Image (tube, rainbow, N blue to C red):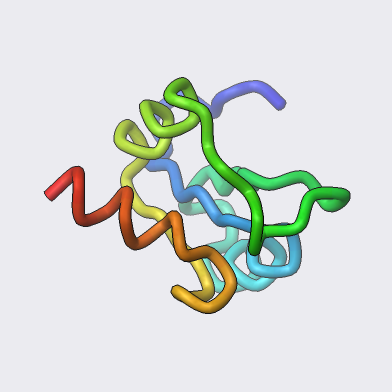
Amino acid sequence: EAEQVGKRKIITTFYPLKLVIEEIVGDAFEVENLISQNIDPHIYEPKPSVISKLYAADQLVFYGHDLEPWAEDIIKEHN
């Protein structure tokens, strides 16, 4: 999927969340999904290259600590 020039980027952690966010923001943002559908978000561990991608995004949307405990840790480290 090619990056859309001039659009701010939102990264979601799993596909159903991506669909919801796309409905909300329409074409105003580029929405990218992080975890493929065949990977369990509970046990996912992002690689350093993925963490860099998250830091470069304008927004990270995730469900919460119970589903993606790693996401809050990354946010705390970045702030």
